Length: 225
Image 1 (tube, rainbow, N blue to C red):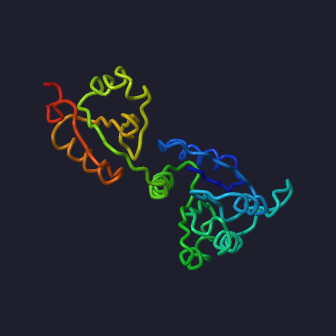
Image 2: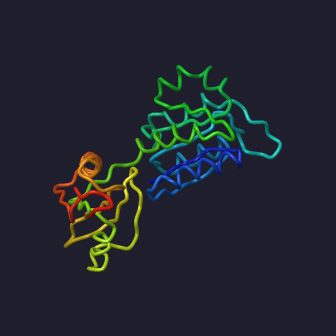
């Protein structure tokens, strides 16, 4: 997933990248700190997501004062000839006045606004949810739900899966391949019929597998299995 972050505040940039890197998917982040560089980047390549501040320098020079660039961002990225005309845009700004005065325009061009507050984690939760909606959908041929980590480890020992666990949409997953067919091993956070049913239903909705199966007694009771 390719993400362009347009931000001139180093502290805020670091926090934004922290949320992006914690999403559990492979994300390639490109940074820029001015409208001039923003235009250069969106002209060169297509991104899966753009995260931008609404108050930025035009050229990014040391003594240049940042200004409200909302209309310029909309003009550049929502141009019909832009490679990123349909790219999702999330505006993260601590200048609420800029967001409020431009709300109708931002809404019209489907640009989501999140109010940033230094020292608070509330904006991060909203940002995380918005990112999840922008992740390109990946489908799998099959999914194996394992009751225990031990059972998942058996597939690694057999050479079907790599010893690397990743978090996809909050699910603990391991990628695997069998005779050219792409699959996932998923271990529910807790044992039990209800938890396994919830995880299985979510996996079907997210990954659209052709087949889903279970390895082990997923309906066991924790501590007694």
